[in-house]
Length: 202
Image 1 (tube, rainbow, N blue to C red):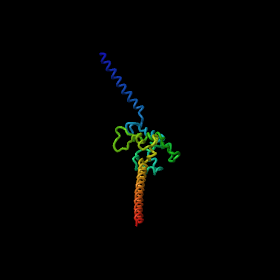
Image 2: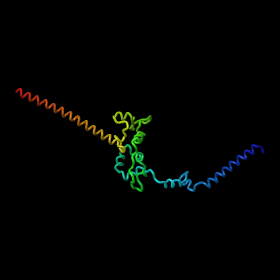
Image 3: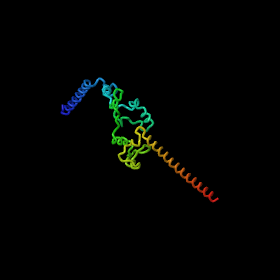
Image 4: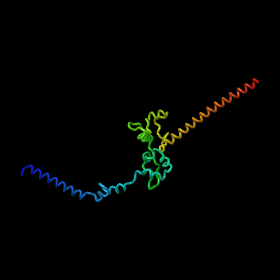
């Protein structure tokens, strides 16, 4: 028997021993719920479900905040999670009862959150509303540290803007109407002066 045959025998012995040890280890240590719902431990679901809930979803908020839901439902922000800007549900509600106000994120964080989606970056084009924050505030002549919610309602971003636009349009119409009335008044005054002048001459 050559040294090569001896080497092959040892290698085969190690491979077979390793396979046997692996099978025994799997039989001893494999959880009983393994494979119940696929290629993982079924009891993991029960373990996760038994943990205290921290986050809810928007349906958790609707029961108490119907008016906000109605506003948001028609808005472009309808898919955003309430907990993105507010505290997690567990810090606001316990056993279906409010025990603390839902805190809104800080001013600094608020703008950061808005700009995650609305900041002008390469590849974000099209109909999606994007801005260059510095230019946006500069054009509107607003202070650089102004938060987005000073002009935009977070739940329905364009509501305040559209309201302000309609107010501006109304103001402009009033201004034009006043100008027209002023012009008419001046024309009437001129006509009356001319009539009075003609009467004096007679």
